Image (tube, rainbow, N blue to C red; front, side, top):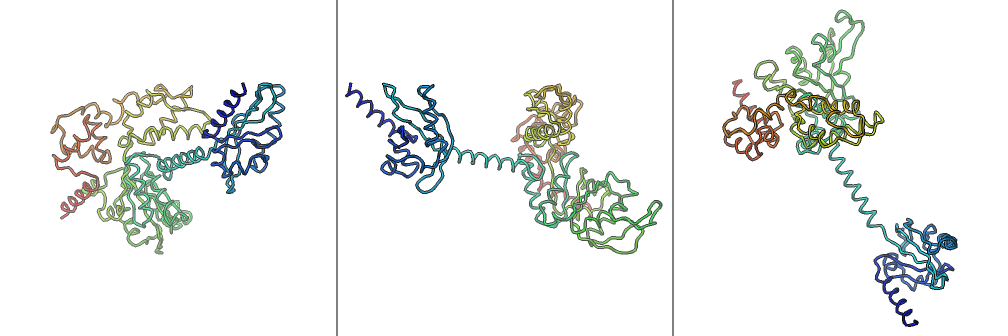
Length: 479
């Protein structure tokens, strides 16, 4: 029996020494009687440094020390084999470092029931904490990449917009933001201003298409008292209010030829007069314009001045339509669900699979604004914590009543090479922001097939090359 006891003791010591976790045995008087290699490696203290000492110098009274010993001893009176599980605290290493640990402790008794002491296993959780920090940093990085100055998206198309916004913010050049209604042109204009050196100065926004032509001049340049019937006092115009800041001219393609002349003068010299006034005012204003029209077509057809067009379009930024960056739809959906959950107090987890399939298949003629409206509609209708197809606007379930692009997905299914004209393919490419994969989805063919058709038909391979060719064509037409 004695031999077996010695073997059991040796086996236990070997086991404790080979453990990856730290192990220490504290007797009933609070003295350390065992300190394995893992503890020495973790703390820098060798067994010779600690055996026979108490635990107070480890500075972890909540999980290693007299308080825990007292707890276990008192529990042992009513619960034999008492233990403490997963107590988190810190111990101080020999070099002074505070090491986060998790401690498990168990009261040990011999065969006669006499108390031998408390066996503690100590797990160093620094690797876990470091991993958690890395995950949090990665999540922050992903979040920052997906949310840029209020604009949401991770697709290559919208990431390109993010880069262009950053470049535009570093310069003073006039910016032309091009994109369909609802794509977020105003958000891009705000981002450019907020990232620029003018961020502490005014950002003045003007929707040129929403102001009657008779009032637009007064709105932009102001007027003197008595300049016209109803002008009972002097008014400061938007350009004057934007001095040293930025003015955002939305729907610039809707202004009249007469207003185009006045606007060109401001861009060239920074000078203007209030309506009815004689004093010339001079301002320092950075101009950001936006339109959902094809201004090059407007120039060719004589409705928009070519010199003004090139003054405004020094730095163009094209915002792709939502159907050209469908990978962003789930991210945008989650963004708007979070937004309306916060504003309404309703907790909606998301969309079921069928509802998300409808969202992904729809052409979104109203782009991001329409998607936001669809989620807001769902918050009104939905009676559970999951949005279903029945909770979405009816048009999402009826693509035949949607946009022209939605119909094209059905009508133009798998055309043969040569069955689509150069003009039609160009139109789809421009419409999708030169996203060949999206055009392929519309036509029911692969991205490679679109690339081959473009090469065969002599179509530029990218948006910049197409723009350069169009400018050359415009200059040739004018001469």
